[in-house]
Image 1: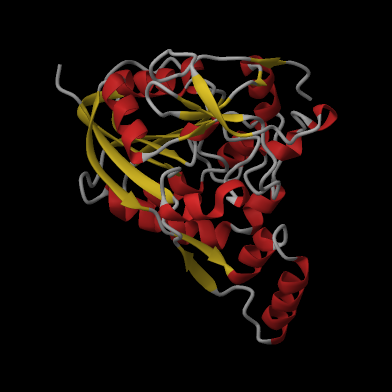
Image 2: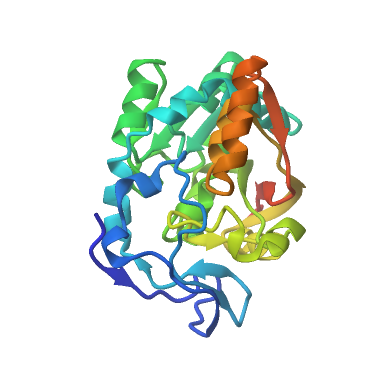
Length: 305
């Protein structure tokens, strides 16, 4: 449970002049509960105060829970529902690996925030030498003990990998959770070999769908501390020592049953009917590609010194 909050300056430019986009709507007694930090939590629309930097346009949560408290909460996450959707995640990560292999087809790969190791499992089967870092002790232990993967429980800053160790570093749906994303990107840069590649997925705050949804946009959540646009992510990558290679819209693949469970927040009656249809027609395992244009896949290369 998080007990205190802190105010922070912009992580991209250091300024402290902001305008408020959305007011805090989390009750103080609800702040920092562990289940709000599950990957599969459905607390859509429950968030702290979200502001926009008037100097560089980075959007972030301010004030927010203290960094040390957030780290402690993530270490305690036990998200069994994440495993229930493994089939859908496998399909998504197979697609993500194809994106990686457009640029590199083998080598040493580090997945930051690897959860239970599903992406690492996919990459292993394609011949990659894989390593993972995951703050959740439960998820890291699952990846190590059940899948036999090289996964460390902790954070990127806590690792002692030598500099210039990896050909590829991935951060799938991770950057927006960091208290200091610029620092994490700088650390990743130091661990990449010359011309090494970084791949990440994150939300696109400037997408037409995000603007259309406004305060009802489902990615406005307590666990998300930063909301990037193509412009702000490129600025931060350059500041961290990367050059942008490509930004593309990200497609996620989920099973029908899981998709319906994620929509319950918006319309319980409709989703109840869809659950009934899924059960009757045996559609629950059907893979559904989802792309509203509000998620982006980013590829960046370590700049030559």
